[in-house]
Amino acid sequence: FSDVITNVPSGFKSYFNSPKYRFNAGFANSGLGKSKKLGFNIMMRWQDAFTWEGELANGPVPAFTTFDAQVSYNIQKANSSIRLGGTNIFNKYYKTAFANPSIGGVYYLGFLYNL
Image (cartoon, rainbow, N blue to C red):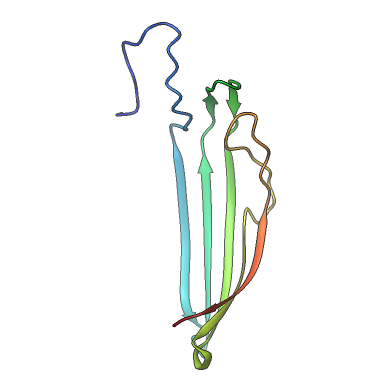
């Protein structure tokens, strides 16, 4: 691994602050249905636990898994689409750094116009 530091002095802090492993998997499709106007996107994100090292604080950042999803409807005559989705759709609170606030779900409804 290129992110492993060896032969360092005692007490050395790298401040990498990044997990050793992360994994993302997704599945998407568009042009579904008789009129081929429907689409979807599903994403799973997993991050391993790691130890946060910083000047403010040091401590554990737990592993977490989140799911994102989106459905879309294309309006071909208007050269646009409507999208409904969210990140962390199950609203499982997680932290990306020690001493940071927890992050919950974010949901959206959008209108996209293609030029």
